[in-house]
Structures are given as C-alpha cells and as structure tokens.
Length: 164
Image 1 (cartoon, rainbow, N blue to C red):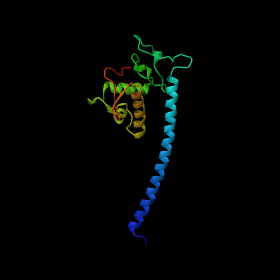
Image 2 (cartoon, rainbow, N blue to C red; image 1 turned 60 degrees about the horizontal axis):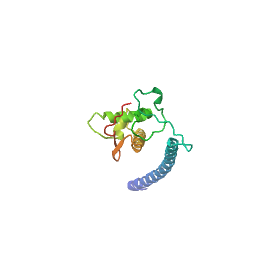
Image 3 (cartoon, rainbow, N blue to C red; image 1 turned 90 degrees about the vertical axis):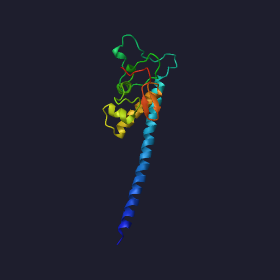
Image 4 (cartoon, rainbow, N blue to C red; image 1 turned 45 degrees about the vertical axis):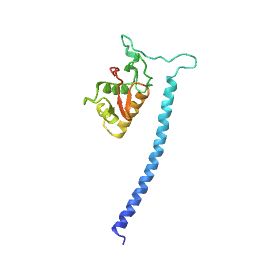
C-alpha cells in the first residue's frame, strides 16, 4: 500500500502536468488574440492615413457650435490628438475614460490605474474588464489623448479636460 506522502506527490505531479499543459494552451491562445489585435490596429491606422489620391479623410475639429453628427460611434478609429480636436470625435467608451480622468477619481489622485478606471466606469474589476480598459487607455495614450505617467497609470493631460 502506498504511503500518504507518495499519494500526495503523485497527485502533485499530475496537477503540475495539467497546469503546464493549460499554460501552453493559454500562451497559444494569447498569441492568436495578439495577432488579431495587431491586425485590427494596423487596419485602423491605415484607414486613418491620408489616401494616395491626396484626399484626406474628414476630421472633426472644435467649432463654436458642435454639430451632433460629428460624434463618433462605437468601433470608430481613435484619431491622433492635435490642437482643435475635441473628445466628441472619440467613441463613447473612450469619451467615458477621458471624462473619468478629467474629473478625477474623487480621492484626489491625479493618475489612475486600469483597475481604478474600471471601477470608476462602473465595471466589475475582473481581469477581462480591466484589460479592456487598459487596451483603450493605452490606445488613448499612444494617440496623445492621455498621458501614461508611469507604466499602467493614466491621467488627462494638463490643461485638457475630457468634457464631451
């Protein structure tokens, strides 16, 4: 009859093999997911660039009287920020992130991490939701709408609010 320690070691080895198999499967799934994210971002960048025929895609700039039809819809491209652009050119999810950071977290902090942002947006702080917020915040920072003060901490640029 095997000893209790022997049985535990056998079960530990079996659990380790299962963990290693699942980790390998997770790495493969993440690689596939990452390829789709990169492809989508590449297509969005290409669509945002000027066309070869010299015609520039329309860009909405701030005016004295905002027009309702200038608001972006979910899934639209995040343009690079430049003087005159207003947050209404951003899709609703991105505008909400801008608004939260412009108004502050209520605790007096200037920058927020993605978990805090998710909670402030009314989302559950579960990994899937936090990663969605992180992806959007990183995109906004890469395009000049936000500042990543340190890795994973985001804030609205000084002098620019998120007011939609």
